[in-house]
Length: 293
Length: 340
Image (cartoon, rainbow over all chains, first blue to last red; front, top):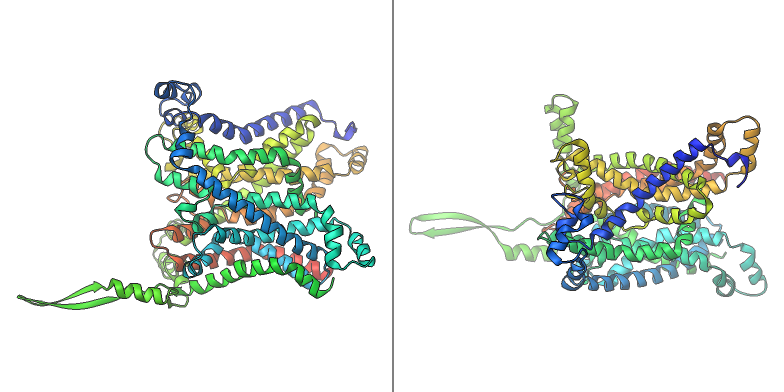
Protein backbone atom coordinates (compact mmCIF):
# COMPACT_ATOMS: atom_id res chain seq x y z
CA UNK A 1 0.00 0.00 0.00
CA UNK A 2 2.89 2.35 0.66
CA UNK A 3 3.91 1.94 -2.97
CA UNK A 4 4.69 5.26 -4.57
CA UNK A 5 2.68 4.34 -7.64
CA UNK A 6 -0.47 4.40 -5.54
CA UNK A 7 0.09 7.68 -3.75
CA UNK A 8 -2.40 10.33 -4.83
CA UNK A 9 -1.88 14.08 -5.16
CA UNK A 10 -4.06 15.94 -2.68
CA UNK A 11 -6.24 17.57 -5.36
CA UNK A 12 -7.22 14.23 -6.84
CA UNK A 13 -7.66 12.78 -3.37
CA UNK A 14 -10.07 15.56 -2.48
CA UNK A 15 -12.03 15.06 -5.70
CA UNK A 16 -12.33 11.30 -5.15
CA UNK A 17 -13.41 11.78 -1.54
CA UNK A 18 -16.13 14.26 -2.44
CA UNK A 19 -17.33 11.93 -5.20
CA UNK A 20 -17.47 9.12 -2.67
CA UNK A 21 -19.49 11.22 -0.21
CA UNK A 22 -21.83 12.13 -3.07
CA UNK A 23 -22.30 8.47 -4.00
CA UNK A 24 -22.87 7.34 -0.41
CA UNK A 25 -25.63 9.96 -0.09
CA UNK A 26 -27.24 8.83 -3.35
CA UNK A 27 -27.05 5.18 -2.32
CA UNK A 28 -28.20 5.48 1.28
CA UNK A 29 -30.35 8.60 1.57
CA UNK A 30 -33.50 7.16 -0.11
CA UNK A 31 -33.54 4.33 2.43
CA UNK A 32 -32.93 6.54 5.46
CA UNK A 33 -35.58 8.98 4.27
CA UNK A 34 -38.18 6.27 3.69
CA UNK A 35 -37.46 4.60 7.04
CA UNK A 36 -37.88 7.96 8.80
CA UNK A 37 -40.98 8.83 6.78
CA UNK A 38 -42.66 5.49 7.47
CA UNK A 39 -43.26 6.66 11.06
CA UNK A 40 -45.11 9.79 9.90
CA UNK A 41 -48.61 10.35 8.58
CA UNK A 42 -49.24 10.90 4.89
CA UNK A 43 -49.66 14.65 5.37
CA UNK A 44 -46.03 14.87 6.44
CA UNK A 45 -44.30 12.32 4.21
CA UNK A 46 -46.17 13.62 1.16
CA UNK A 47 -46.46 17.22 2.22
CA UNK A 48 -48.18 19.63 -0.12
CA UNK A 49 -47.17 22.60 1.99
CA UNK A 50 -43.55 22.15 2.89
CA UNK A 51 -41.13 19.26 2.54
CA UNK A 52 -39.63 20.06 5.96
CA UNK A 53 -42.84 18.79 7.58
CA UNK A 54 -41.46 15.30 7.01
CA UNK A 55 -38.61 16.20 9.36
CA UNK A 56 -40.55 18.12 11.99
CA UNK A 57 -43.67 15.93 11.81
CA UNK A 58 -46.23 18.73 12.30
CA UNK A 59 -49.18 16.87 10.86
CA UNK A 60 -48.15 13.71 12.69
CA UNK A 61 -48.22 15.63 15.98
CA UNK A 62 -51.55 17.19 15.14
CA UNK A 63 -53.15 13.89 14.12
CA UNK A 64 -51.66 11.46 16.62
CA UNK A 65 -50.22 13.55 19.42
CA UNK A 66 -46.64 12.37 19.00
CA UNK A 67 -43.82 13.04 16.55
CA UNK A 68 -43.72 9.42 15.42
CA UNK A 69 -46.54 7.02 14.76
CA UNK A 70 -46.82 3.31 14.03
CA UNK A 71 -50.09 3.73 12.16
CA UNK A 72 -48.61 2.73 8.82
CA UNK A 73 -47.20 -0.50 10.23
CA UNK A 74 -50.39 -1.29 12.13
CA UNK A 75 -52.45 -0.70 9.01
CA UNK A 76 -50.23 -2.84 6.82
CA UNK A 77 -49.54 -5.73 9.20
CA UNK A 78 -52.85 -5.98 11.07
CA UNK A 79 -55.52 -4.39 8.92
CA UNK A 80 -54.22 -5.49 5.52
CA UNK A 81 -52.75 -8.74 6.88
CA UNK A 82 -49.28 -8.23 5.49
CA UNK A 83 -48.07 -11.00 7.79
CA UNK A 84 -49.80 -13.52 5.56
CA UNK A 85 -47.71 -12.32 2.63
CA UNK A 86 -44.60 -12.57 4.80
CA UNK A 87 -45.44 -16.18 5.63
CA UNK A 88 -45.99 -16.99 1.96
CA UNK A 89 -42.72 -15.37 0.99
CA UNK A 90 -40.89 -17.37 3.67
CA UNK A 91 -42.35 -20.64 2.38
CA UNK A 92 -41.58 -19.82 -1.25
CA UNK A 93 -38.04 -18.66 -0.51
CA UNK A 94 -37.17 -21.62 1.71
CA UNK A 95 -38.30 -24.30 -0.71
CA UNK A 96 -37.02 -22.53 -3.80
CA UNK A 97 -33.54 -22.18 -2.31
CA UNK A 98 -33.45 -25.75 -0.97
CA UNK A 99 -34.59 -27.43 -4.19
CA UNK A 100 -32.66 -25.13 -6.47
CA UNK A 101 -29.41 -25.69 -4.58
CA UNK A 102 -29.80 -29.47 -4.63
CA UNK A 103 -30.33 -29.55 -8.38
CA UNK A 104 -27.64 -27.04 -9.26
CA UNK A 105 -25.02 -28.57 -6.97
CA UNK A 106 -25.32 -31.95 -8.68
CA UNK A 107 -25.46 -30.51 -12.17
CA UNK A 108 -22.75 -27.93 -11.54
CA UNK A 109 -20.38 -30.61 -10.31
CA UNK A 110 -20.93 -32.74 -13.41
CA UNK A 111 -20.57 -29.73 -15.72
CA UNK A 112 -17.30 -28.68 -14.11
CA UNK A 113 -15.80 -32.17 -14.48
CA UNK A 114 -17.03 -32.99 -17.97
CA UNK A 115 -14.98 -32.23 -21.06
CA UNK A 116 -17.59 -33.28 -23.60
CA UNK A 117 -19.16 -30.91 -26.12
CA UNK A 118 -22.63 -31.25 -24.71
CA UNK A 119 -21.53 -29.85 -21.35
CA UNK A 120 -20.49 -26.69 -23.18
CA UNK A 121 -23.77 -26.55 -25.11
CA UNK A 122 -25.74 -27.01 -21.92
CA UNK A 123 -23.99 -23.98 -20.39
CA UNK A 124 -24.61 -21.88 -23.52
CA UNK A 125 -28.28 -22.93 -23.49
CA UNK A 126 -28.42 -21.91 -19.82
CA UNK A 127 -26.95 -18.52 -20.76
CA UNK A 128 -29.71 -18.02 -23.32
CA UNK A 129 -32.37 -19.06 -20.81
CA UNK A 130 -30.85 -16.57 -18.36
CA UNK A 131 -31.33 -13.82 -20.95
CA UNK A 132 -35.05 -14.44 -21.38
CA UNK A 133 -37.25 -12.13 -19.31
CA UNK A 134 -39.30 -14.28 -16.85
CA UNK A 135 -42.49 -12.59 -18.01
CA UNK A 136 -42.13 -14.13 -21.50
CA UNK A 137 -42.13 -17.57 -19.87
CA UNK A 138 -45.07 -16.66 -17.64
CA UNK A 139 -47.22 -16.00 -20.70
CA UNK A 140 -46.42 -19.57 -21.74
CA UNK A 141 -47.41 -20.99 -18.35
CA UNK A 142 -50.81 -19.39 -17.91
CA UNK A 143 -52.93 -21.37 -20.38
CA UNK A 144 -51.62 -24.85 -19.45
CA UNK A 145 -51.72 -24.02 -15.74
CA UNK A 146 -55.38 -22.95 -15.99
CA UNK A 147 -56.24 -26.09 -17.90
CA UNK A 148 -54.47 -28.43 -15.50
CA UNK A 149 -55.70 -26.53 -12.46
CA UNK A 150 -52.19 -25.71 -11.25
CA UNK A 151 -52.65 -21.96 -11.20
CA UNK A 152 -52.71 -20.05 -7.91
CA UNK A 153 -50.79 -22.52 -5.77
CA UNK A 154 -47.63 -21.80 -3.82
CA UNK A 155 -46.14 -25.13 -4.91
CA UNK A 156 -46.48 -24.21 -8.59
CA UNK A 157 -44.74 -20.90 -7.98
CA UNK A 158 -41.92 -22.67 -6.14
CA UNK A 159 -41.33 -25.12 -8.99
CA UNK A 160 -41.38 -22.30 -11.55
CA UNK A 161 -38.93 -20.20 -9.53
CA UNK A 162 -36.63 -23.21 -9.16
CA UNK A 163 -36.55 -23.63 -12.94
CA UNK A 164 -36.00 -19.92 -13.61
CA UNK A 165 -33.22 -20.02 -11.02
CA UNK A 166 -31.42 -22.95 -12.63
CA UNK A 167 -29.49 -21.25 -15.46
CA UNK A 168 -27.90 -18.73 -13.13
CA UNK A 169 -27.20 -21.25 -10.34
CA UNK A 170 -25.66 -23.68 -12.84
CA UNK A 171 -23.17 -21.09 -14.02
CA UNK A 172 -22.28 -20.10 -10.51
CA UNK A 173 -21.90 -23.63 -9.13
CA UNK A 174 -19.89 -24.70 -12.18
CA UNK A 175 -17.46 -21.86 -11.69
CA UNK A 176 -17.11 -22.67 -7.98
CA UNK A 177 -16.51 -26.36 -8.64
CA UNK A 178 -13.86 -25.53 -11.25
CA UNK A 179 -11.89 -23.93 -8.43
CA UNK A 180 -11.89 -27.19 -6.48
CA UNK A 181 -8.92 -29.18 -7.87
CA UNK A 182 -9.84 -32.19 -9.98
CA UNK A 183 -7.03 -34.13 -8.31
CA UNK A 184 -9.10 -34.22 -5.14
CA UNK A 185 -11.94 -36.39 -6.43
CA UNK A 186 -9.74 -38.20 -8.96
CA UNK A 187 -7.42 -39.43 -6.25
CA UNK A 188 -10.46 -40.59 -4.29
CA UNK A 189 -11.54 -42.54 -7.35
CA UNK A 190 -8.08 -44.06 -7.69
CA UNK A 191 -8.52 -45.20 -4.10
CA UNK A 192 -11.64 -47.10 -5.17
CA UNK A 193 -14.53 -44.67 -4.80
CA UNK A 194 -17.02 -44.40 -7.60
CA UNK A 195 -18.13 -40.95 -8.83
CA UNK A 196 -20.98 -40.64 -6.33
CA UNK A 197 -18.85 -41.70 -3.38
CA UNK A 198 -16.12 -39.28 -4.42
CA UNK A 199 -18.73 -36.52 -4.58
CA UNK A 200 -20.25 -37.54 -1.26
CA UNK A 201 -17.06 -37.97 0.76
CA UNK A 202 -14.54 -35.66 -0.85
CA UNK A 203 -16.34 -32.81 -2.62
CA UNK A 204 -19.33 -32.37 -0.31
CA UNK A 205 -17.23 -31.30 2.72
CA UNK A 206 -15.33 -28.61 0.80
CA UNK A 207 -18.08 -27.14 -1.37
CA UNK A 208 -19.98 -25.14 1.27
CA UNK A 209 -18.65 -21.64 0.48
CA UNK A 210 -19.88 -22.00 -3.10
CA UNK A 211 -23.22 -23.45 -1.97
CA UNK A 212 -23.80 -20.62 0.51
CA UNK A 213 -23.03 -17.94 -2.07
CA UNK A 214 -25.22 -19.56 -4.73
CA UNK A 215 -27.93 -20.01 -2.10
CA UNK A 216 -27.80 -16.31 -1.29
CA UNK A 217 -28.40 -15.36 -4.89
CA UNK A 218 -31.16 -17.95 -5.29
CA UNK A 219 -32.78 -16.45 -2.22
CA UNK A 220 -32.52 -12.94 -3.64
CA UNK A 221 -34.07 -14.08 -6.91
CA UNK A 222 -36.99 -15.73 -5.15
CA UNK A 223 -37.43 -12.88 -2.67
CA UNK A 224 -37.22 -10.10 -5.27
CA UNK A 225 -39.34 -11.81 -7.89
CA UNK A 226 -42.37 -9.85 -8.98
CA UNK A 227 -43.56 -11.04 -12.44
CA UNK A 228 -43.88 -14.75 -11.59
CA UNK A 229 -45.59 -14.35 -8.21
CA UNK A 230 -47.84 -11.56 -9.46
CA UNK A 231 -49.16 -13.63 -12.36
CA UNK A 232 -49.22 -17.12 -10.84
CA UNK A 233 -50.66 -16.50 -7.36
CA UNK A 234 -54.14 -15.32 -6.45
CA UNK A 235 -55.18 -12.82 -3.80
CA UNK A 236 -55.26 -15.34 -0.94
CA UNK A 237 -51.68 -16.56 -1.16
CA UNK A 238 -49.86 -13.52 -2.49
CA UNK A 239 -46.24 -13.03 -1.56
CA UNK A 240 -44.83 -9.76 -0.25
CA UNK A 241 -43.83 -7.99 -3.45
CA UNK A 242 -47.13 -8.46 -5.35
CA UNK A 243 -48.91 -7.52 -2.12
CA UNK A 244 -47.04 -4.21 -2.01
CA UNK A 245 -47.90 -3.63 -5.67
CA UNK A 246 -51.56 -4.29 -4.89
CA UNK A 247 -51.46 -1.74 -2.04
CA UNK A 248 -50.67 0.84 -4.69
CA UNK A 249 -53.63 -0.06 -6.85
CA UNK A 250 -56.31 -0.32 -4.18
CA UNK A 251 -55.35 2.05 -1.40
CA UNK A 252 -55.80 5.48 -2.85
CA UNK A 253 -57.77 6.71 0.17
CA UNK A 254 -56.06 9.07 2.55
CA UNK A 255 -53.40 7.64 4.81
CA UNK A 256 -53.32 4.26 3.14
CA UNK A 257 -50.33 5.01 0.98
CA UNK A 258 -48.48 4.93 4.30
CA UNK A 259 -49.39 1.21 4.52
CA UNK A 260 -47.36 0.72 1.38
CA UNK A 261 -44.48 2.77 2.80
CA UNK A 262 -44.49 0.67 5.99
CA UNK A 263 -44.68 -2.55 3.96
CA UNK A 264 -41.78 -1.42 1.81
CA UNK A 265 -39.65 -0.78 4.89
CA UNK A 266 -40.66 -4.17 6.30
CA UNK A 267 -39.66 -5.90 3.05
CA UNK A 268 -36.31 -4.10 2.96
CA UNK A 269 -35.28 -4.98 6.52
CA UNK A 270 -34.40 -8.66 5.84
CA UNK A 271 -32.26 -7.67 2.85
CA UNK A 272 -30.44 -5.17 5.03
CA UNK A 273 -29.63 -7.89 7.57
CA UNK A 274 -28.61 -10.20 4.74
CA UNK A 275 -25.97 -7.77 3.43
CA UNK A 276 -24.81 -7.12 6.98
CA UNK A 277 -23.96 -10.79 7.54
CA UNK A 278 -23.09 -11.98 4.04
CA UNK A 279 -21.37 -8.99 2.45
CA UNK A 280 -18.23 -11.02 1.72
CA UNK A 281 -20.17 -13.86 0.05
CA UNK A 282 -22.24 -11.45 -2.05
CA UNK A 283 -19.11 -9.73 -3.30
CA UNK A 284 -17.40 -13.03 -4.10
CA UNK A 285 -20.55 -14.25 -5.85
CA UNK A 286 -20.80 -11.15 -8.04
CA UNK A 287 -17.22 -11.57 -9.13
CA UNK A 288 -17.27 -15.38 -9.50
CA UNK A 289 -18.63 -15.23 -13.02
CA UNK A 290 -16.40 -12.32 -13.96
CA UNK A 291 -13.14 -14.04 -13.14
CA UNK A 292 -13.81 -16.49 -15.93
CA UNK A 293 -14.24 -13.58 -18.33
CA UNK B 1 -16.52 -38.50 -16.61
CA UNK B 2 -18.70 -41.22 -18.13
CA UNK B 3 -21.74 -40.18 -20.19
CA UNK B 4 -24.15 -42.06 -17.96
CA UNK B 5 -22.76 -40.58 -14.74
CA UNK B 6 -22.88 -37.11 -16.25
CA UNK B 7 -26.55 -37.46 -17.14
CA UNK B 8 -27.45 -38.87 -13.74
CA UNK B 9 -25.97 -35.78 -12.10
CA UNK B 10 -27.46 -33.32 -14.59
CA UNK B 11 -30.84 -35.00 -15.01
CA UNK B 12 -32.92 -33.23 -12.28
CA UNK B 13 -31.73 -29.80 -13.33
CA UNK B 14 -32.17 -30.59 -17.02
CA UNK B 15 -35.68 -31.87 -16.37
CA UNK B 16 -36.67 -28.69 -14.52
CA UNK B 17 -35.31 -26.50 -17.31
CA UNK B 18 -36.91 -28.58 -20.07
CA UNK B 19 -40.34 -28.68 -18.45
CA UNK B 20 -40.47 -25.08 -17.30
CA UNK B 21 -38.31 -23.17 -19.76
CA UNK B 22 -38.13 -25.06 -23.06
CA UNK B 23 -41.74 -26.25 -23.13
CA UNK B 24 -43.17 -22.85 -22.13
CA UNK B 25 -41.26 -21.31 -25.01
CA UNK B 26 -42.89 -23.88 -27.29
CA UNK B 27 -46.22 -23.07 -25.67
CA UNK B 28 -45.67 -19.33 -26.26
CA UNK B 29 -44.87 -19.94 -29.92
CA UNK B 30 -47.98 -22.11 -30.33
CA UNK B 31 -50.26 -19.66 -28.56
CA UNK B 32 -48.98 -16.81 -30.68
CA UNK B 33 -50.37 -18.59 -33.77
CA UNK B 34 -53.86 -18.93 -32.33
CA UNK B 35 -56.57 -16.51 -31.34
CA UNK B 36 -59.51 -16.89 -29.01
CA UNK B 37 -62.75 -18.03 -30.61
CA UNK B 38 -64.97 -15.19 -31.56
CA UNK B 39 -68.29 -14.79 -29.83
CA UNK B 40 -71.08 -16.91 -31.24
CA UNK B 41 -73.52 -14.54 -32.88
CA UNK B 42 -77.09 -15.57 -33.40
CA UNK B 43 -79.75 -13.92 -35.44
CA UNK B 44 -83.19 -14.33 -33.94
CA UNK B 45 -86.32 -13.30 -35.72
CA UNK B 46 -88.67 -11.39 -33.47
CA UNK B 47 -92.18 -11.24 -34.75
CA UNK B 48 -94.50 -8.82 -33.03
CA UNK B 49 -97.73 -7.10 -33.90
CA UNK B 50 -95.87 -4.62 -36.15
CA UNK B 51 -94.08 -7.12 -38.33
CA UNK B 52 -90.92 -9.08 -37.93
CA UNK B 53 -87.40 -7.83 -37.21
CA UNK B 54 -84.06 -9.60 -37.09
CA UNK B 55 -82.16 -9.23 -33.83
CA UNK B 56 -78.50 -10.02 -33.57
CA UNK B 57 -77.33 -11.20 -30.17
CA UNK B 58 -74.39 -12.96 -28.58
CA UNK B 59 -75.08 -16.47 -27.45
CA UNK B 60 -73.14 -16.44 -24.18
CA UNK B 61 -73.59 -20.14 -23.42
CA UNK B 62 -72.50 -21.32 -26.82
CA UNK B 63 -69.50 -18.95 -26.71
CA UNK B 64 -68.43 -20.25 -23.33
CA UNK B 65 -68.93 -23.87 -24.36
CA UNK B 66 -66.87 -23.38 -27.50
CA UNK B 67 -64.07 -21.56 -25.64
CA UNK B 68 -63.98 -24.20 -22.90
CA UNK B 69 -63.86 -27.00 -25.43
CA UNK B 70 -60.97 -25.45 -27.32
CA UNK B 71 -59.09 -23.17 -24.90
CA UNK B 72 -56.31 -22.68 -27.42
CA UNK B 73 -58.74 -21.03 -29.84
CA UNK B 74 -58.61 -21.03 -33.60
CA UNK B 75 -55.54 -21.09 -35.79
CA UNK B 76 -54.84 -17.70 -37.33
CA UNK B 77 -51.27 -18.09 -38.59
CA UNK B 78 -49.25 -14.91 -38.37
CA UNK B 79 -52.23 -12.60 -37.84
CA UNK B 80 -51.24 -11.92 -34.23
CA UNK B 81 -47.85 -10.69 -35.37
CA UNK B 82 -49.18 -8.48 -38.13
CA UNK B 83 -52.09 -6.87 -36.28
CA UNK B 84 -52.12 -3.36 -34.88
CA UNK B 85 -50.82 -4.46 -31.50
CA UNK B 86 -47.55 -5.83 -32.87
CA UNK B 87 -45.72 -5.34 -36.14
CA UNK B 88 -48.69 -3.45 -37.57
CA UNK B 89 -47.56 -3.86 -41.17
CA UNK B 90 -50.58 -2.07 -42.62
CA UNK B 91 -50.46 0.85 -40.20
CA UNK B 92 -46.73 1.41 -40.65
CA UNK B 93 -47.03 1.39 -44.45
CA UNK B 94 -49.97 3.78 -44.21
CA UNK B 95 -48.09 6.07 -41.83
CA UNK B 96 -45.06 6.07 -44.14
CA UNK B 97 -47.21 7.08 -47.11
CA UNK B 98 -49.32 9.65 -45.34
CA UNK B 99 -46.80 11.36 -43.09
CA UNK B 100 -44.97 14.51 -44.08
CA UNK B 101 -41.43 14.23 -42.81
CA UNK B 102 -39.64 11.80 -40.59
CA UNK B 103 -40.84 13.51 -37.38
CA UNK B 104 -44.46 12.95 -38.21
CA UNK B 105 -43.78 9.32 -39.11
CA UNK B 106 -41.96 8.88 -35.80
CA UNK B 107 -44.94 10.25 -33.87
CA UNK B 108 -47.27 7.88 -35.64
CA UNK B 109 -44.91 5.01 -34.91
CA UNK B 110 -44.84 5.90 -31.21
CA UNK B 111 -48.61 5.56 -31.12
CA UNK B 112 -48.37 1.89 -32.02
CA UNK B 113 -47.98 -0.05 -28.75
CA UNK B 114 -45.36 -2.54 -29.89
CA UNK B 115 -43.13 0.07 -31.50
CA UNK B 116 -43.35 2.44 -28.56
CA UNK B 117 -42.43 -0.46 -26.24
CA UNK B 118 -39.47 -1.62 -28.29
CA UNK B 119 -38.19 1.93 -28.81
CA UNK B 120 -38.31 2.61 -25.07
CA UNK B 121 -36.67 -0.72 -24.25
CA UNK B 122 -33.81 -0.20 -26.71
CA UNK B 123 -33.27 3.43 -25.66
CA UNK B 124 -33.25 2.40 -22.02
CA UNK B 125 -30.77 -0.41 -22.66
CA UNK B 126 -28.42 1.69 -24.79
CA UNK B 127 -28.33 4.64 -22.38
CA UNK B 128 -28.33 2.84 -19.04
CA UNK B 129 -25.70 0.20 -19.88
CA UNK B 130 -22.75 2.54 -20.67
CA UNK B 131 -23.62 5.01 -17.91
CA UNK B 132 -23.80 2.16 -15.38
CA UNK B 133 -20.34 1.02 -16.40
CA UNK B 134 -18.87 4.52 -16.17
CA UNK B 135 -20.43 5.24 -12.77
CA UNK B 136 -19.48 1.80 -11.48
CA UNK B 137 -15.88 2.29 -12.58
CA UNK B 138 -15.74 5.75 -10.95
CA UNK B 139 -17.04 4.35 -7.65
CA UNK B 140 -14.56 1.47 -7.82
CA UNK B 141 -11.64 3.87 -8.32
CA UNK B 142 -12.87 6.12 -5.51
CA UNK B 143 -13.40 3.27 -3.04
CA UNK B 144 -10.04 1.78 -4.01
CA UNK B 145 -8.32 5.03 -3.04
CA UNK B 146 -10.21 5.30 0.26
CA UNK B 147 -8.76 4.36 3.61
CA UNK B 148 -8.73 0.58 4.10
CA UNK B 149 -10.73 0.71 7.34
CA UNK B 150 -13.77 2.41 5.81
CA UNK B 151 -13.90 0.28 2.65
CA UNK B 152 -16.10 -2.36 4.32
CA UNK B 153 -18.85 0.10 5.31
CA UNK B 154 -18.54 1.79 1.91
CA UNK B 155 -19.15 -1.50 0.11
CA UNK B 156 -22.07 -2.21 2.44
CA UNK B 157 -23.78 1.08 1.60
CA UNK B 158 -22.99 0.73 -2.09
CA UNK B 159 -24.60 -2.71 -2.26
CA UNK B 160 -27.96 -1.44 -0.97
CA UNK B 161 -29.41 -0.13 -4.27
CA UNK B 162 -28.44 -3.36 -6.03
CA UNK B 163 -29.67 -5.92 -3.49
CA UNK B 164 -32.97 -4.11 -2.91
CA UNK B 165 -36.04 -5.62 -4.57
CA UNK B 166 -36.41 -3.72 -7.88
CA UNK B 167 -40.08 -3.00 -7.29
CA UNK B 168 -39.36 -1.68 -3.79
CA UNK B 169 -36.27 0.29 -4.79
CA UNK B 170 -38.09 2.05 -7.59
CA UNK B 171 -41.04 2.79 -5.28
CA UNK B 172 -38.71 4.40 -2.76
CA UNK B 173 -37.30 6.68 -5.48
CA UNK B 174 -40.73 7.33 -6.94
CA UNK B 175 -42.12 8.52 -3.61
CA UNK B 176 -39.22 10.92 -3.30
CA UNK B 177 -39.69 12.48 -6.75
CA UNK B 178 -43.45 12.67 -6.32
CA UNK B 179 -44.66 16.26 -6.63
CA UNK B 180 -45.29 16.14 -2.86
CA UNK B 181 -42.05 14.34 -2.02
CA UNK B 182 -38.71 15.78 -1.04
CA UNK B 183 -36.89 15.48 -4.39
CA UNK B 184 -39.98 16.49 -6.35
CA UNK B 185 -40.21 19.71 -4.36
CA UNK B 186 -36.49 20.29 -4.74
CA UNK B 187 -36.91 19.97 -8.52
CA UNK B 188 -39.81 22.43 -8.46
CA UNK B 189 -37.71 24.86 -6.50
CA UNK B 190 -34.68 24.45 -8.79
CA UNK B 191 -36.67 25.00 -11.95
CA UNK B 192 -38.87 27.65 -10.30
CA UNK B 193 -41.89 25.81 -11.65
CA UNK B 194 -44.36 24.84 -8.90
CA UNK B 195 -46.39 22.65 -11.29
CA UNK B 196 -43.49 20.47 -12.35
CA UNK B 197 -44.39 16.82 -11.91
CA UNK B 198 -42.53 13.75 -13.10
CA UNK B 199 -45.82 11.90 -13.35
CA UNK B 200 -47.12 14.39 -15.92
CA UNK B 201 -44.15 14.68 -18.24
CA UNK B 202 -42.95 12.03 -20.69
CA UNK B 203 -39.29 13.19 -20.97
CA UNK B 204 -38.99 13.51 -17.18
CA UNK B 205 -40.51 10.05 -16.73
CA UNK B 206 -38.04 8.52 -19.18
CA UNK B 207 -35.16 10.32 -17.47
CA UNK B 208 -36.32 9.18 -14.04
CA UNK B 209 -36.65 5.55 -15.16
CA UNK B 210 -33.11 5.68 -16.50
CA UNK B 211 -31.81 7.31 -13.33
CA UNK B 212 -33.37 4.46 -11.43
CA UNK B 213 -31.80 1.93 -13.82
CA UNK B 214 -28.34 3.40 -13.29
CA UNK B 215 -28.77 3.75 -9.52
CA UNK B 216 -29.86 0.13 -9.29
CA UNK B 217 -27.16 -1.43 -11.47
CA UNK B 218 -24.09 0.73 -10.74
CA UNK B 219 -23.22 -1.22 -7.55
CA UNK B 220 -22.94 -4.43 -9.56
CA UNK B 221 -20.47 -2.84 -11.99
CA UNK B 222 -18.68 -1.30 -9.02
CA UNK B 223 -18.17 -4.60 -7.19
CA UNK B 224 -16.87 -6.36 -10.30
CA UNK B 225 -14.47 -3.53 -11.19
CA UNK B 226 -13.36 -3.13 -7.59
CA UNK B 227 -12.41 -6.81 -7.45
CA UNK B 228 -10.54 -6.31 -10.73
CA UNK B 229 -8.63 -3.31 -9.37
CA UNK B 230 -7.34 -5.45 -6.48
CA UNK B 231 -5.50 -7.66 -8.96
CA UNK B 232 -3.86 -4.96 -11.10
CA UNK B 233 -0.21 -5.87 -11.28
CA UNK B 234 1.63 -3.28 -9.16
CA UNK B 235 4.99 -4.18 -10.68
CA UNK B 236 3.74 -3.23 -14.14
CA UNK B 237 2.32 -0.06 -12.69
CA UNK B 238 5.59 0.94 -11.06
CA UNK B 239 7.60 -0.02 -14.13
CA UNK B 240 5.36 2.25 -16.19
CA UNK B 241 5.97 5.03 -13.68
CA UNK B 242 9.73 4.64 -13.86
CA UNK B 243 9.45 4.77 -17.65
CA UNK B 244 7.87 8.18 -17.23
CA UNK B 245 4.17 7.42 -17.63
CA UNK B 246 1.98 9.96 -15.87
CA UNK B 247 -1.10 9.06 -13.83
CA UNK B 248 -3.52 9.21 -16.71
CA UNK B 249 -1.26 7.14 -18.95
CA UNK B 250 -0.94 4.51 -16.24
CA UNK B 251 -4.73 4.31 -15.93
CA UNK B 252 -5.06 4.22 -19.71
CA UNK B 253 -2.34 1.65 -20.50
CA UNK B 254 -2.14 -0.49 -17.34
CA UNK B 255 -5.45 -0.42 -15.46
CA UNK B 256 -7.94 -0.24 -18.32
CA UNK B 257 -6.50 -3.15 -20.36
CA UNK B 258 -6.58 -5.21 -17.17
CA UNK B 259 -10.23 -4.29 -16.54
CA UNK B 260 -11.37 -4.78 -20.16
CA UNK B 261 -12.52 -8.43 -19.88
CA UNK B 262 -14.60 -7.39 -16.86
CA UNK B 263 -16.20 -4.61 -18.91
CA UNK B 264 -17.27 -7.22 -21.46
CA UNK B 265 -18.75 -9.34 -18.68
CA UNK B 266 -20.65 -6.44 -17.09
CA UNK B 267 -21.89 -5.29 -20.49
CA UNK B 268 -23.26 -8.74 -21.26
CA UNK B 269 -25.11 -9.02 -17.94
CA UNK B 270 -26.35 -5.44 -18.15
CA UNK B 271 -27.68 -5.84 -21.70
CA UNK B 272 -29.69 -8.85 -20.55
CA UNK B 273 -31.00 -7.17 -17.42
CA UNK B 274 -31.78 -3.78 -18.93
CA UNK B 275 -33.61 -5.33 -21.85
CA UNK B 276 -36.09 -6.89 -19.43
CA UNK B 277 -36.77 -3.59 -17.64
CA UNK B 278 -40.14 -4.02 -15.99
CA UNK B 279 -40.57 -3.36 -12.27
CA UNK B 280 -39.79 0.39 -12.31
CA UNK B 281 -42.56 0.88 -14.86
CA UNK B 282 -44.99 -0.73 -12.44
CA UNK B 283 -43.75 1.32 -9.48
CA UNK B 284 -43.63 4.60 -11.36
CA UNK B 285 -47.09 3.95 -12.78
CA UNK B 286 -45.49 4.97 -16.05
CA UNK B 287 -47.80 3.26 -18.54
CA UNK B 288 -49.05 6.55 -19.95
CA UNK B 289 -45.53 7.75 -20.79
CA UNK B 290 -43.36 4.71 -21.28
CA UNK B 291 -43.87 1.03 -21.98
CA UNK B 292 -41.25 -1.66 -22.18
CA UNK B 293 -41.63 -5.03 -23.90
CA UNK B 294 -41.92 -6.81 -20.55
CA UNK B 295 -44.51 -4.33 -19.34
CA UNK B 296 -46.49 -4.71 -22.55
CA UNK B 297 -46.68 -8.48 -22.02
CA UNK B 298 -47.60 -7.95 -18.35
CA UNK B 299 -50.42 -5.54 -19.14
CA UNK B 300 -51.83 -7.94 -21.76
CA UNK B 301 -51.74 -10.80 -19.26
CA UNK B 302 -53.07 -8.85 -16.32
CA UNK B 303 -56.12 -7.02 -17.62
CA UNK B 304 -59.79 -7.91 -17.22
CA UNK B 305 -59.67 -9.94 -20.42
CA UNK B 306 -56.45 -11.88 -20.46
CA UNK B 307 -55.05 -11.37 -23.93
CA UNK B 308 -52.93 -14.52 -23.88
CA UNK B 309 -52.37 -14.67 -27.63
CA UNK B 310 -51.32 -11.08 -27.92
CA UNK B 311 -48.93 -11.53 -24.98
CA UNK B 312 -47.55 -14.69 -26.59
CA UNK B 313 -46.82 -12.87 -29.86
CA UNK B 314 -45.01 -10.08 -27.98
CA UNK B 315 -43.05 -12.70 -26.01
CA UNK B 316 -41.87 -14.42 -29.19
CA UNK B 317 -40.80 -11.08 -30.68
CA UNK B 318 -38.99 -10.22 -27.42
CA UNK B 319 -37.11 -13.52 -27.44
CA UNK B 320 -36.10 -12.92 -31.07
CA UNK B 321 -34.81 -9.44 -30.14
CA UNK B 322 -32.74 -10.93 -27.32
CA UNK B 323 -31.34 -13.51 -29.71
CA UNK B 324 -30.21 -10.71 -32.02
CA UNK B 325 -28.81 -8.76 -29.07
CA UNK B 326 -26.77 -11.71 -27.82
CA UNK B 327 -25.71 -13.12 -31.19
CA UNK B 328 -22.28 -11.38 -31.21
CA UNK B 329 -21.51 -12.92 -27.80
CA UNK B 330 -22.71 -16.35 -28.85
CA UNK B 331 -20.71 -16.25 -32.09
CA UNK B 332 -17.59 -15.21 -30.19
CA UNK B 333 -18.03 -17.92 -27.55
CA UNK B 334 -18.56 -20.47 -30.31
CA UNK B 335 -15.32 -19.37 -32.06
CA UNK B 336 -13.39 -19.50 -28.78
CA UNK B 337 -14.76 -22.96 -28.15
CA UNK B 338 -13.87 -24.15 -31.67
CA UNK B 339 -10.44 -22.60 -31.39
CA UNK B 340 -9.69 -24.06 -27.98
